[in-house]
Image 1 (cartoon, rainbow, N blue to C red):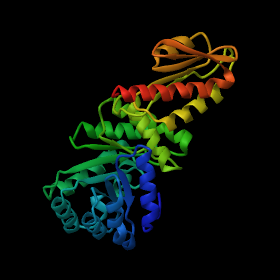
Image 2: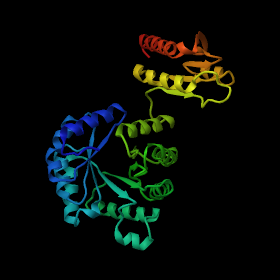
Image 3: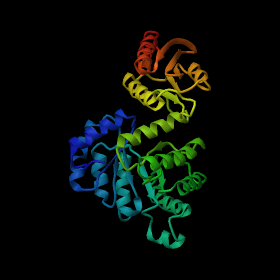
Image 4: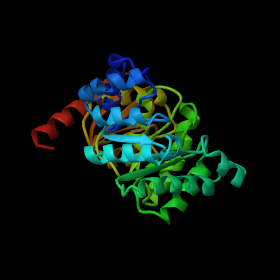
Length: 331
């Protein structure tokens, strides 16, 4: 999300993304100057860098020579078949894939006239046109994205294309919105497709910090069992039975757990005696709230009973001790 002519700012942001769970980063290369410094970004990036190219095929050639792990282009908007051939030859020489990026907001004029709007069928036809341009040159090291700004069109487009081709798909609900609504729309669209076995890479598109996009995407993958790592925290929504400040306790515990940072542990922060003890005992480490106090369980065994004001530090002490115990055991 930086001005990619600024190498320092871009590399710094990439490191922040990687720290938040990002595994592949896309960098726009919109100008000659951005192309000239692109190799510096790839050389310093801790993760593979995809070069995002529009209109000027020469920038794709420069990016490929500059260490791009993939070229994101629309073959139909970089000129004639000779220019497509030049990009394909370069990608083949470097052994890197090309991502065809179809977006509901930038479909070809004739397709919009044919279908009336950016329908799923129009998006798929656009993708197939772009694929044909590459396949004419014998190039099949390709992946495809079909992004629309709403969930239903996105899901329908990917489902439709999945019936017709066997290329890898890059999933995304594009321009999904600000963090609240965008997270919901992205989770629904990507979650539906991934649950159906469709998709190979994902992008969460939020108006805001890129690190939040990474965290949301990583949590989606973990929720569907497609990624491991990090911790899982179960917490109740609170109700009239709760007799502790559950919102404060849960948020402070979660913040502390992120600093402790152990992998693969389930924590539970529950507010009352109805579901609390069961969920707390079922977790690796859990707390069940009572009247101004809490019971802390480790692997189903009650280990401490503490006052509400001591609950957060006591729980985090137990979490550190549990982490150390697992580390010594080679977990």
